[in-house]
Image (tube, rainbow, N blue to C red; front, side):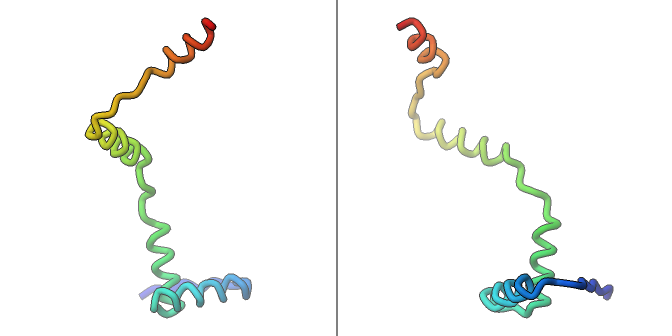
Length: 77
């Protein structure tokens, strides 16, 4: 299996990695692999979250006023 060697890692960064690995019950190497694997995942599509929120609002049955209409009313005062 290929290896990856990272040189000149700051002591504080390595200590943070060790602490994170310990918190997750993994070795430092396993934690580094998990971080790399997570970083290589496709970023979540922000529209998925927006659409889910819109669906939640629709299911709630609430209605919301038109903000453009409110702005027009405010300007007319």
